[in-house]
Image (cartoon, rainbow, N blue to C red; front, side):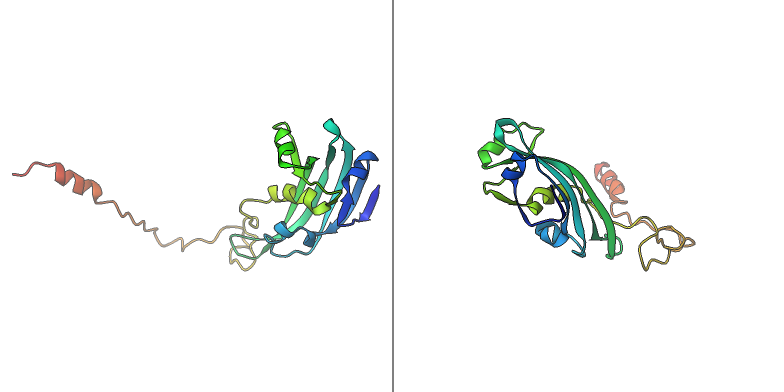
Length: 182
């Protein structure tokens, strides 16, 4: 069992033959694709992965991965801390054709080499857990005047809301066209 600070590359075939377990963490900077979506790449990814041999002597990886990342809040454009957590179950295959042979409910990763980056095993799973629109909770955006009272910023409540209706006169215009001329 590998534990603690983890290496970048592991021999997935050897671990599967030994029914090995990897538990520990590695820097978030190793997740290059995910890193491009983050406001800050500081932090660590914690994981626990169990390797075994499955059908057709393929390497199976089952485990859990989690991290806390800083995303850009889409309301205030300031960093917001977000916990990403995912259970994973992958089958390592060597080609696209092998990947297509997997059952519909099975997830696979293509990797023909003996050594596989740990980041490659977990990065897609973490990216799938990203919120579609990252935001602070209501009233928690820094710099917001209404953050202290917990309500969204609105126009003056005394001022009546004016609505622009660009097609308001369209019904009248159509009605005039249909009337017979006199």
